[in-house]
Image (cartoon, rainbow, N blue to C red):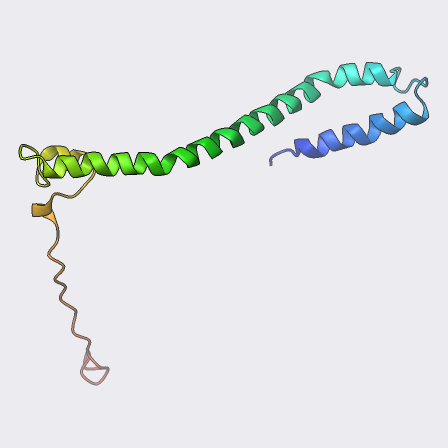
Length: 125
């Protein structure tokens, strides 16, 4: 089961903030609020780092999504050029290696539907 680190961060804030406001000079568990914050620093630093990385990730996703249509157009242009190249063409191995089905290997589209038998004509039961 995955731990809920946001809940731990929330709980930390719920404990330390009132302590600092209401009893800033009182020791609990032999700690001042400042010492408590210092002992929690590895956790809070990691949370801050995660927050920064999530922000960077979100910006990178926006950049990627903005650049995608231009790349798709570029890909389509290259594939069209391969199809139109007299040495390669749409039946060539390069076209197939790019993940496309060569024209001479495509299905014809012809389908033969199975004949449906009615229960009276069925298995003779």
